Length: 489
Image (cartoon, rainbow, N blue to C red; front, side, top):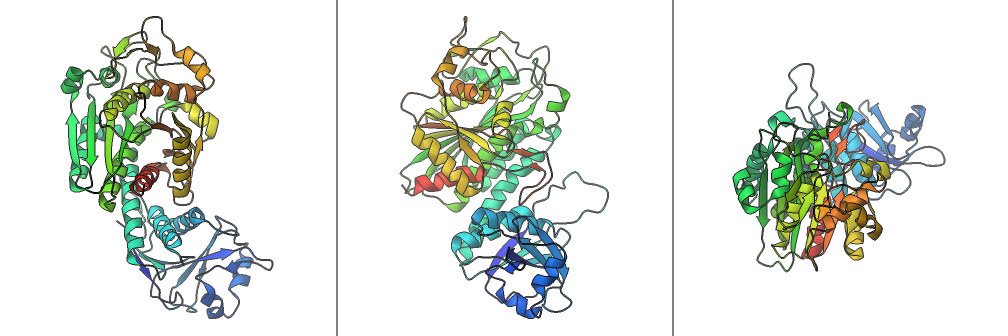
């Protein structure tokens, strides 16, 4: 695990393997950003010219590596572009990209703008997230280890580095879970890992197995999981604080593998469905982070875990299931399974009398069609809550956009044989229709928000900023941020 510390030493003389420095675009070439003023003098005023010679301009996202030839203590200089006026997210991305480029290097110093607590935390967190690597299954070839030791040049207190470490470790846990193949992460195994990690963080943990779920009437979880030899689980994690005045409940979709069931997905849509438990992962990571930060708030998390496979025992299109809330649901498409496990989790979470329920899920392909791979859709039964979730996500650097729940779409979920159907007959507005379905299971008077992060949970493309290829850990920091907001109310 990569460690980070803060140190106010002059970056020119600090002993390290690589020095990371920020630059902004200037009229005559790149200009050193705050934190790197002494470097130009150390290079005899020729640093900007040297960077310009390799076409480095200082634009956000640019990277250049130069040997220092003894001009400073570090043998390698990494110049990273910050753009004109980097916000905390720009600093996080710059730090992450630079640290990621130094895989195989033991130590690195980040001399990026870090004059405020927010800036220092952004640099530290970005560096830690950029140092993530998932190598559990690598057995051959040269493996470059991520940077093991990071130092942020800043006069801020060590509390900043400690908080950044907690956030990074929570996100890394989620990334590890999402990246783990379904052969090693079935519902019962996920529950075991959650139980272990939760107990280590001081959470109380309760696990319901398939018999208990059936006896208690969790028809959604049972229905989705009945086609697999690996039966479903419901995990309840709880954190309490003696000074808490608010209670939050988080509900995560945890489909450890989604084949679509009898409504089978095409193979091209199935190979990354190990990520379909990303919502449950984010809830677990968030609860652990909230506990480690000691936030004065009560938080409850529900992991709705099932494996959606086709077999002779799988649920069929046209089946009717009885949800935990008592409502009946006609299953028109077994690949619309996430909402079936979430409806049970939401109804159970309401029994904790929370001030807010937030469910998070890799729920619909329609989210990707509407908002792309990096922006989650946020829906809610309260406009202020929807805007709060978007605001907190944006501050965390996790893209989110508020979406409506149009009343006219509800009629499309009518069923001739049950209280509601699990699929809207029209293709259009699928993300919104899924949100409307979930809203039906939120009791009157309970504030609720739904985050659809089907795209952001898994990066199928190349790494960027502090985001690796594969599992991203998306929305974990948003949930922690929501807990922090409610702790301060």
